[in-house]
Amino acid sequence: MKNREYLSFDVGEDEAIIDAVEAKGHLLPIGCRYGGCITCAAKLLEGKVRQPNGTALNKRQSSAGYILLCVARPKTDCVLEVGVESHDKLYVNPFSVSGGYVPPLKGNKK
Amino acid sequence: METTEAECCTGPGYASPQEAIKAPKEKVVYTICIYTGTGIERPDYLATIDVDPDSPTYSQVIARTEMPTVGDELHHMGWNACSSCHDDSEMSRKYLIIPGVRTTNFYIVDTATDPRNPTLYKTIDGEEIKKKTNLSAPHTVHCLGSDIIVSMLGDANGNAPGGFLHLNKDFEIMGRWEKDITGMKFNYDFWYQPRHNMMVSTEWGAPNTFMPGFDLEDVGKGKYGQQIHFWDFKNKSIERTVDLGEEGLIPLEVRFHHNPDSTHGFVGATLSSNVFHWYKDDAGELQIEKVIDVDAIDVETFPVPMPGLITDILVSMDDKYLYFSNWLHGDLRQYDISDPSNPKLTGQVWIGGLLGKAPVVNGQAIAGAPQMIQLSLDGKRLYVTTSLFSTWDNQFYPDMKQAGGVMLIVDCDNENGGMTINKDFLVDFGKEPNGPARAHETRYPGGDCSSDIWV
Image (cartoon, rainbow over all chains, first blue to last red; front, top):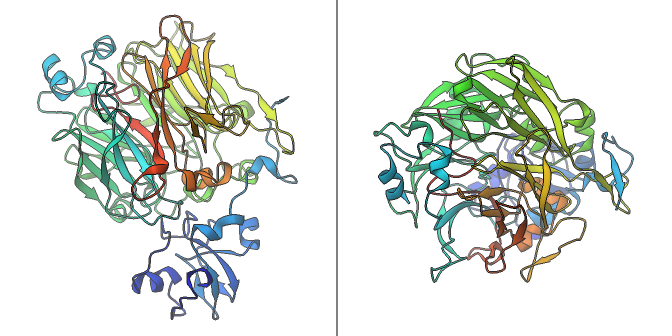
C-alpha cells in the first residue's frame, strides 16, 4: 500500500484483500462487504485483481483504476493507494460533466 | 420531557396533533453523526445536543453514543412507540431504533433512562436480518401500536425492490411485513394514515445503484424510481401505483397531514425538484397534482442544468406549513399550504449550497447545504443539518469530509410566515473530539413532526 509506507500483505488467491489487511489488525474504510457500497474503494496502481461481485463501480470509476477491497482478489502482486485520500477521482458532480444522459430538467439562467 | 408525556396521558405521545403542539419546548435533540467516507475509521454515533437557551451548554454536543461497528452509515431513525399507542399504558417512548444503511445492523438506543446521555440497549445483526428476510439497506422506521415497520431498499445482495421489515416490540425479527409488492420497482420512504387505511411509499433506487454515488446514466437506464404506491394498509398490499412521469423523477420523502382525519399528503420528487400533493376527493377518488416546481439552474461551466434537489420535506404539526430543502441550490423554503392545492411561498433562507449564495453562515464556512430538517412541535424552530449520504456528499460537497457538518436553527414565523437563521445557535461537527463528522437526521425525545402518527 503505497500511501501506508508501502505496508505489504500476503493475500491468498481466493482471499479478499480487506480480509488480509484486517487480519493483521489494520483499519481501512469498509461498509457493506459485498461489493455494493464503494466505501472500501482503492486505486490499483500496479497489478491485476479479480472482482467476482464488484458491482458498485461504474465504467468511469473502473477505468480510473478503482477496485473494491471487500471483493477484489489478487491475480498478481499489486500496488495500491488506499483510504479516502485515494478517492480524488472516484466522485464527480454529474451535472458538471458532458457527454452523458441529460434528464428532462427545465433550466433557468442564473 | 418524558414526565410531561406521562402526565398528559396513559401511553406515549399525545392525544392529538393539537395536544402535541402544546408540549413543552424541546431541551435536547438527537442527531446522527457519521464518519463513513470521511477517512476517520471510527463508528458512527448519536449526538445529544443541548437546545435549551437557558442552559450553560446550549448549542453544544453534550453526549456521544458510539455504535460498536465501523462503516454502518447510520441514516434515519425512529421511535419504538409514538402517539399511535397513546392509549396503551404498557408502552412508553423509550428507545430509538437506529439502522445502518450500509451494514443493515440495527441499534436500539435507550434515551429514557437518561435523556441527556443515551446508551446502547441492543444490537440486531444485519447478517441475521439478511438471512431471515432477504432484505438489506434499512431506511424509514415507523411504529404502529406495538409493532415496528422499516422500509428496506434492497434484497440481501443489494438489488431492488426490497420490501418492509417487521420487528415486534421486543425488537425480534418477525419477518417481512408486506404481503404483495407487485408494481413496486424500488423502495424508500413511507407514511401511513390509519383512519383511511392508507399508506404511501416512494422509490429511490437499488442499493447497488445509489450506494456508489449518483450517476445520471443510471437515471437514463431507469435505475431510479418515478412511481409512488398507495397501499391497502390493513391488507399490506399495493392498491394503486402512480407513475409521476418525467416531472416526478426520484420521489423520496413523503408526508401525510398530521390530522388523522385528512387524506392529504405531499411527496418531494427529488431530481425533478417538484412537490406533488394527493388527496381523496368527495367521491373517494384519489387525486394527485404537481403543486410546486423548483426550476433547475444553468450553472456556468456545467453542461447539465442543476436541479434544487428536494431531499427532505416536512409538514408542521398544525398542517399549515410545508418546509423543504434544495440541497444543491442551498435554500430552505416555507410554503403556506392552508390551501394544499395552491401552496404559497412565505419564507426562504440560504445556507451554503453550490450557487455560492451563502458560503458563510453565523461566521461558519458551510461545506454542504440544508438537507435534513426537523421542526419543533410548536412549529417555531426548524433544526437543519447538512449531510445527505456519504458517497453523494463526496460527489457534490467533497470538502465536507474534512470540514464536517453543521446544525443550525431557523426561526419560523408560523402566524404570518417567514424564516430567519437563529444567530445564537450553531453546532460545528468539524470540531468533534475524534475529528470532523457529517450530521444527518434529528429527533426530539418527546416526538417530532416526522415521527408521530394518530390511529
